[in-house]
Amino acid sequence: MENKRLKEIKLGIYLNHIDKTKDKMQYFRLVNVLASLATSFGDDVKDAFTEILKASVCDGLVGASNKEIISCYRNYFSKNQIAKRLNLTTAGFDYRYRGEVTREFDKDFIDNLEPTLTNKKSEFMVDQIINFIEKFKVPTSNTVINELDEKRTLEIDFYLIYNKLCELYRNDSFISKFIYNLCNVFELDYSTINNLKNNIHLINRSFPNFRYNSPYFKQELFTLFTLRGYSKGTIGTEVFGRNASYLYNNASLFNKVIPEEDRAWQYYPTVDWEGMDVLSVKKFIAILHEFIDYDV
Image 1 (cartoon, rainbow, N blue to C red):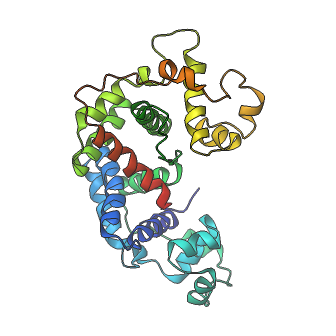
Image 2 (image 1 turned 120 degrees about the vertical axis):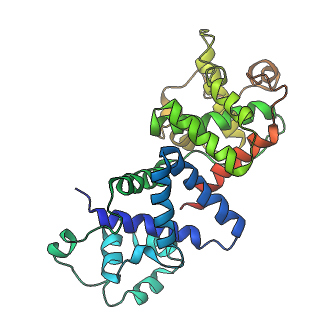
Image 3 (image 1 turned 180 degrees about the vertical axis):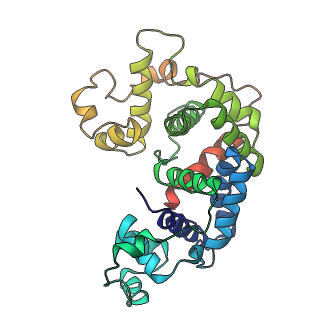
């Protein structure tokens, strides 16, 4: 069973890393992705998030002692990972915590640690925010490929984001709340983003249920990310969520780039974009890609 205090400090380290950005607008964007998520769980979870955020910035680290920070590091991070999040070199980390980094702490010390946020909603919030930070990962290259239809590319990038949210939450109502909160705080056109979500069955070509729709969609994914410079192994793992050999072993129907003469009928938008705000879609994708790239 994981120690609740160490998990609390772990989140504090993640939030402190956001505080380390030198760009105030980037700080606003990164924090508000997480605030939008917390708000989607309810006001009490949002309040708990606000509380731990205040306790984590400016090297607050949720009031953690040096011994607690070293214990957290040993449980959850490599030295490179924690040094990066504290804006230190590994040598600087060793120097700052030189009194504790080589010491062993007895089991009683760890067992007796108590979280500073003690209610159930705070515990839930810590688990959920950490889970999102660590598991919300999609390919973030947004290179524009001029020879591919831009709106179809936006549909595919949106699909990858939505599909990952479905993997994490398996609750369409919750995902809708999260999307609404993101659109609200970043002043995006919710009706446009919601229209993409509601037509995900068209975007991934699961409807209508024609024989070759699935391999055609996979070939579109393969084409886009190949032209963006991804290797077959990376596409297998980051785009399809399989092993690195996936596209070498089992994908003869879709592991080739769509020929130029076929792109007009195969790589084309599935959603009616009339009246939709393309800029809001681009911003929505860019905000979540930035969050992933920052590596909170």
